[in-house]
Length: 153
Image (cartoon, rainbow, N blue to C red; front, top):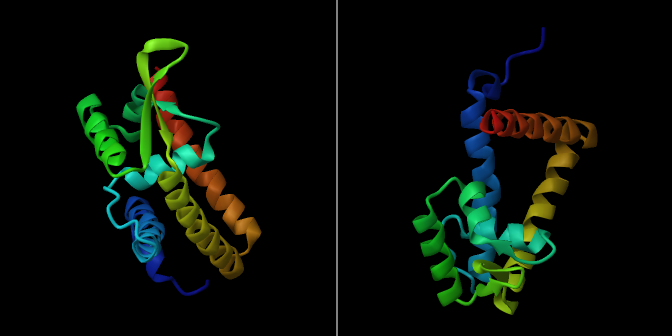
């Protein structure tokens, strides 16, 4: 039997938290070097998510995705708008809804984030192999689906 590794003794939730920190800390360092040092906590998620999407996102969806209150999402969006990362516009399909989109500054910050994410992903694949990365993604995706199914019940 192979020797136990340090991570075999750590709970999965703790591993997930610290693994997330690997990405977040590296992104924050790179963003600060490029002059984007004023992005609030959940701002990385919003900016990165908008960059991967095909347009804007309703604030209501941010509330659901981030698991924060409508007031919290509104404050986050307000901050990102004031700092030049997001624009807020009425939804053309439903004028009662507000859509947030990336500004030029937001897109530039998202590009920095994406570059860091790609570097870390490549380093990880180099250390454990593409098959293990795919298995990890499958496991994380399954965890997410488990919670989504509970929410739908």
